[in-house]
Image 1 (cartoon, helix red, strand yellow):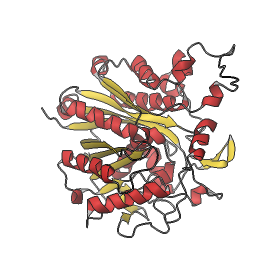
Image 2 (cartoon, rainbow, N blue to C red):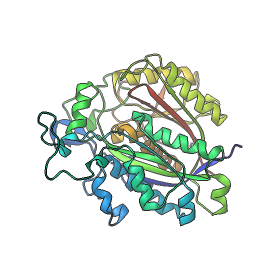
Image 3 (tube, helix red, strand yellow):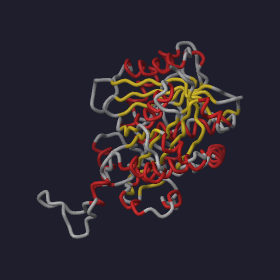
Image 4 (cartoon, one colour):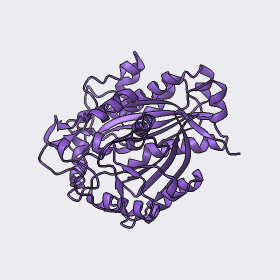
Length: 404
């Protein structure tokens, strides 16, 4: 049994905005939110707007106190997607839930003093563990929305939320579910997370205003700028969506995933297994590489990742030169949430025939790739998304903009 799977609702919380209209307006105006981190003025970051409040999405919810910031973005964007979808209680009950999330590295806030391994203190919340369990966001979404179907929390680093969408797609395609909520959220804008990235030498090292300097695939790239946010999607069997009169945004056509098995942090230099994930997604979509209009690249701005990915794009695409986006140059690196948020931004831009430029790309690291260096206003239909994470986690997804 093989069915067509479509996206019928999108919820997003990002540094560019919380709706498709806000996001595209920011892209066209060149508005970004890069700033120095308040807890470390030597670090640049790209935060969500300071007025973000989880209760604007959940209403009064006593368990909100147990949601770390990344989990809050998961819940907020999931509730936004469900609100737009208009699913009745029975549909929500039968829906699946697939969540891509990362670890809570905001350790210092929860445990400001640890002496001789002693953690306890008088004001420590009784259920503090919930702020560190990976499935807390899924538990909260299910509680708030009445979701009871098959579910999965995925922690595959920077490919997590893209793989969450891919896993939901597979369950619906093969008849396990009729509809599912899928996506992810994350935030690494905390002292603990920044320390981890600094130790791994992945952070952007420029001292100047990174909004004028940070970009992917540039010959002078110097690491990534951390961001935060979340995005969720309602995925449905096409017939199910049509029967309830749902608006359709896009069709999910193919998914691929793989492991490098090479290094705990660095990508396999030749991109052999990353390319295998991309080819798997294309094969499931029944799409030859030369039919891809747009590639949403992982594009972190780190020396090793960008070199591997440029080589992968050249090898997989051959003489075909699709347009290549690098949305992290607009929103920073959202870790586990990057795939879902980049999918939401990519679909919003494509629906309005807009392709945003790769910001600050002055000297491309590869001359045979069609990097978008100036924004374009033109219709496109098919997008290939690529995400590659620590541990050699590779994910790829093919989507097609829906046009009746």
